[in-house]
Image 1 (tube, rainbow, N blue to C red):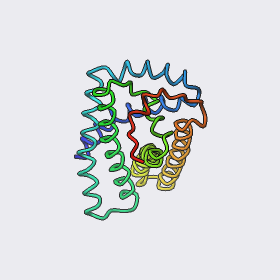
Image 2: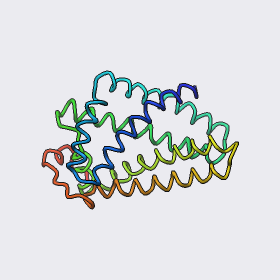
Image 3: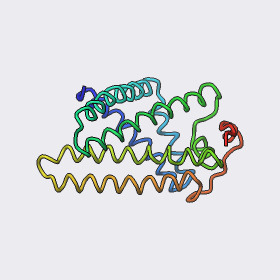
Length: 204
């Protein structure tokens, strides 16, 4: 189970690096973000690549849930508990986010670009749910990776393992802050087309 989790993690990690680079480049300006996204989509939206990534995510979720249940059943140490909790949230986010993207892209025929997220984060009511939803997802990825690094080095150089965990989580907090500032229009002026606001019903 753990071996399958590690194999699928390689594909997921590669996609996440590309995906996060796309988002972070938005800090350099919207044009930079859009240009990079156009090139990146040629890679991860290729039918074969997209299917491999989706299958990798599915494998991560299934094997990750089994591993998390084992951690909780055996009441392992705090770092393992943190790794399991962050992994479960990443899985929850992946399932709901992909379902939302599929709905908008396939059924509503709207481009799932940056404005899709921004429209929700800038809309009064929705922003109170979506800011923590997206922020926790970004932060959870770094927490999960920090726990993995800790686990790798804890048996040989334990002080280094703690340092890597703290630094990775710290970087995650800063990256999360930057991305939320970007998506809420605090770093770059974002003029959202009206059709994106129509996607979010007025529940609040």
